[in-house]
Length: 90
Image (cartoon, rainbow, N blue to C red):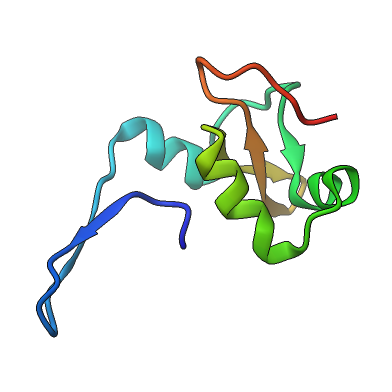
């Protein structure tokens, strides 16, 4: 289960289509603006008592968005509430 929405036909060797728009590209290329509501994967794992494998499915089911932000020399992935989502991350 990845962080991008895609569609693939059920036939063998069919192509995987990934939906990208300007907003998604900006969120994933490290150029998005920092938002104070974002949380690191590590903090979610600690606060919600999740394993690494549980974070992405949980976030997708609950309408959270994934974001890659450049912090100094590195770009890391963060999770932030979607536009209509109230944050229940502690």
